[in-house]
Image (cartoon, rainbow, N blue to C red; front, top):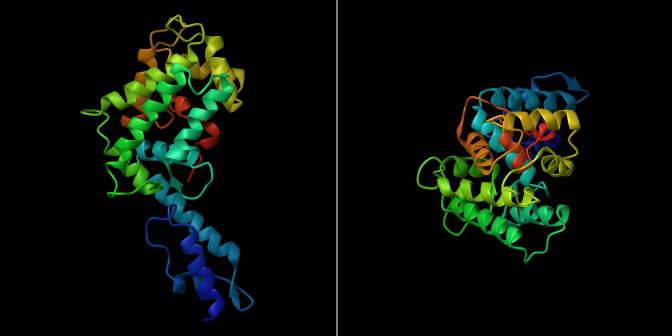
Amino acid sequence: MSKFVLEKADSMQQAWPSVIAVPLPSVAGLLSTPQCGTKPCASTIVDQLYRKDTERMATFDPITRRLRQLFAVLDTDEDGFVTWGDYQRIVDKYMTGYALAKSDARIKSLEKAYWAQWLGLLTQANPGQDRLSQDEFVAAQRAAGYDTYASHLLEDIAQAIFNVLDIDRDKRISRDEFARYLAFYEISSTDAAIIFQRLDLDGDAFISQREVARSLRAFHLYNDDLNTPGGIFLGVTERSSDAP
């Protein structure tokens, strides 16, 4: 067995820590595959790793899969961790998209709501930790108590998001206001109409603050729908649905 093969297999395993959380095939197992000269075919190794991850993803429940998608959306620098800085970028995106100053009450409320959620997630991690890996992020979200003592965390985020989207401040989000928000993510008008209809639970042609809150609860807590529309308020779109 060549030194090159061992180093290559080890480096590939180190590069996939958050994707492959179950034991990878042994080096011996990988080397039992077809050879390209004196070395294992790189494409064969990648295929095996991909199949392993695909099989693992199939066993995840909808909540875990959605939270992994959310992690991928937040981890914009793709360093394998989420930090407060990643949440701050969400707030900054609202500031830019809606031309709001950092001192605007709506932006301050949004930042405060996300900061409270971030602190809540860190309480589920090791003391002194200031960043979360994908697995730690999913575990912290699931243990955050959104269905009991910490339900206010999602409620506050829903209220803050709603206040930004409700441009005319008539206490409801119209189709036009929702379309402006979706423009952030380059979502087509056809898809926008479908998402709006799914969020408009009472069918009154508007989205209320309560409906935003219910959609966020469904995203974090309900196991019956992988593609719950509430993810759109967190930046989770169809294009992020194939996140590892």
